Each structure stands twice: as structure tokens, then as C-alpha cells.
Length: 306
Image 1 (cartoon, helix red, strand yellow):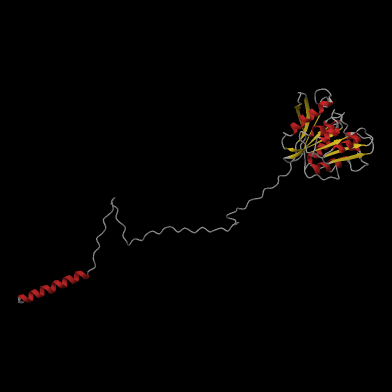
Image 2 (spheres, helix red, strand yellow; image 1 turned 135 degrees about the horizontal axis):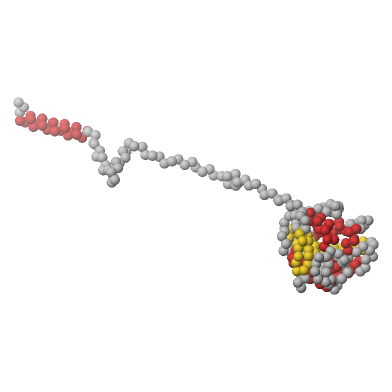
């Protein structure tokens, strides 16, 4: 038997041994309470899902292809083929019906040329000139001039002539010209701020008489103050409009009218006098003198109606 005192010592030793073993043991973790909804919590051993990797955006240098996409340069549209003239009826201020022909420009907008016929004569007298102006090619008519572009062109009959109604009235021809000019400026493809007036005989006077209502240059072929307005006075009223005046020295009063216009002009004024007595449109038939009238006309328009 173990003495009483020995038993107590033994008991103490055993107690100490037991306490030591408990202290060295790995503590057991108490599981976390399940969240509401009955789902089990993830174990710490489960790997956390990594966020998706996003490739960094490359910084483009200025002017790079990504920042400035390549664009196909716009091409200048090819001029359209010349078209046949369109017949038009319009009204003068007093209601008289006038008839004209409009040659639409091959490229838009285009400067315009208003053609004024002589007496006796009609708008058809200008067909060859008008067709060349529209096409922008005067090789057959004016071989010495190379035009840079085509023009919009309009020609009409003064009242009492050709297809237009009413009675012959020269003093009303200025009003007829103003009505034609107003219409011409509204037609498709016409640049209303760049229009030339070109006329022969009565049309030569009308060209300067009406130019104050909106033209950048005027051409007079054989003027004679035929419409009740003195040609020099009409020229003087056009302070900054360049004018070309052509006449034959035997076709009175045209050569002196051109010279008087030159004396009254406040802007560029060019006089061309041919020998002989050809009047108005007949000067286009002069082939033994230079410059040919058609070359002179086309060269003038090229320089003054760009």
C-alpha cells in the first residue's frame, strides 16, 4: 500500500502531467456559424477566385493610325457633259412674256454669262458662242484661248423679236434685260454674284445700262446709245466694273461711242477697233485681223469672270 502522504504526492504529479498535456494539445477551432439562408461558409482552404486580368490600353502616339483613321481623300467631281439648252418663258415687269434659252453649267456653282442679241436678231444668234462657253472649251471658236472652266449661259429674245411677245420698244429693252438677269441669277448652278453681260448693237447698250443691277463685267460689241441712255453716262455710272468695247471704224456711231465710253470710265475700259464696217455679230466673221473677236471675248471673260 502506498502511504497516505505518497498518494497525495502522486495525485498532484498526475494532475500536473494532465495539465501539461492539455496545454500542449492543438486547440480545436470552433466552426463559424452558418450565415442566414443555410449556406455553408467557405473554408479558408478554398482558393479565392482571382479578378480577371485586364490588358492595359496602349497609349497611342499623336497622329497614329488608331487615333486618326485613314480617310479616303475626297475627289473633285468630274464636270458633267454639256446639255442642250432649256427653253424658258418669263415675264418682264410690265407682264410681257419673254422667251430665253438656258445652258446649264457642267460644274456648279459656275459664273454666268447673259447674252444680249442685236437688231435685227434673236437669241439663236448666240448658240455657237453659248455652247462653247458652257463646255468651257473654245478650241473650235477661239483657238488662241484656253478656258479654265465652263459657264452657265442665258440668252433671250427682246420683246417683239424672236419668240418673245409684245411690240418692238427699244426703251423697254433695258427692263427686259433686268428681268432676264433677275431670272438668270436664280437658276440652278448659277453663281449669282459672278455674272457678265455681253451684248451686240442694242444688246451692247443694254449690257452697260443693266449692269448696275448686278454684274461683274460688261462687253459691248458696236454700242450706239440706241436705248435712250447715253452710253458714256451708263459707263460712268459703273464705277468699278471693267468693260470691253469693240467696234469697226466704218460702222458709225459705234467706234466713237466706244471712245467716249473710255473717256467716261472710272474703271478698266478696253477699246478694240477693227477696220471695215462690220456691225455687231458680223465682227465675229472678221478673220484677217487680230485678235479675232472670239479670242478677244473669251480672253476677256477668262480674265474678268474667273
